[in-house]
Image (cartoon, rainbow, N blue to C red; front, side, top):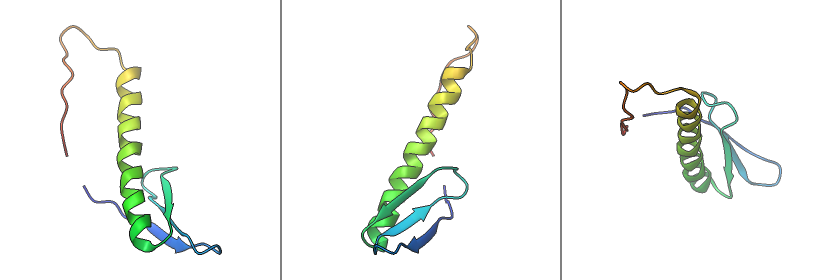
Length: 71
């Protein structure tokens, strides 16, 4: 899976990165490499949390089974 991110250097020198496709998915790092590593972790956490919320909100019928799909 591929996501576009936006990165900018803040006034304090830190690099701030956000993923526009995932509202609120933002991270930072002391350099560009650290910022990109951190946004990767943030994207995974964001997707996991949204999946968990969706599964918890949906009532499962007896005919359904939960199956994990890795991407």
